[in-house]
Length: 385
Image (tube, rainbow, N blue to C red):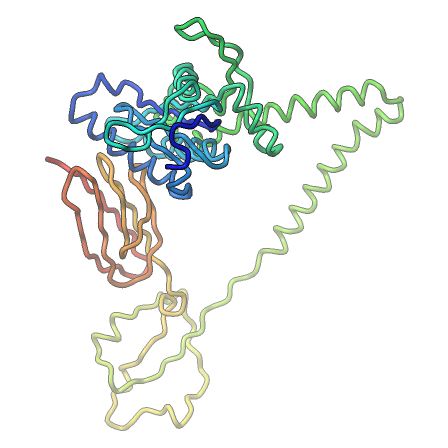
């Protein structure tokens, strides 16, 4: 950083703004900013510290990326996904607008001798962000021209939004990833439907492109070619139905009874045997003669037996459902499992586990639970003052 001080460079800038932040009470602002910082820190995990400069704007942040220009897009997409899947479920909901620009910035030092950035590059990023709707990610023409030439995948992500005029009567051509109103839809629909709406642009672009090519080929085809074009899809559909039917019939395997062998064990008591139960409909006793080496000693009672149950042999996992309000980071046995809300569902092995839930505004909540085979647990924790 010191080598670049007081130098003007071209870099990508991501500007983020928390919607209606100033209209919230102080407690609401603290909750929103804490959640925002958690999401942003997670999104920046893979970006080296020396390749980024973060400015806290109070109601958001501005990040300059001094390395690869696509770093801004990767972080923006990561933030957008996390906010759409979890941020909208916070109380109050965390709604963010984002803008990306590629332009000149000057690296300087502030009054505390900390790295800072100024210049047109960050100003335009803020203007582009101001044109975005809630939950939308917009980029400037300069950034689109650069990143779209890195790979075809990047080029297919954007759709042109037209020219916008800022308060200084300056024109900005902008491109969008995602559509306005997606965050509002996510609060009314499931997370799955929210993700599906994120794919609408690519689907419609593909339909328009292929539809135009097919129509053009059909109009230029001869009579015989048109007959082939019309019948080929029907033949393909019939073959597909036939294949699916054959596969389904082949996959049906008649169920076989589970063979359970009884081995008398002098070391077990009646209570321990009673704890291992098997449904009668799932068991057929094996009539095979027990070898002499496994025969019962005279002092043993033949009514006491050790039974291998279906649960013992399969080791079925338990299902744990957790939800935290207003929000919290969930750790299971020391490993982070995600941020709730929304609902987090985990498959855990039977046995002892420790749950830890963290929220920057409250003491850490810990709970030790004993999970049984195939058990379904529901845990709800609310942080309250």
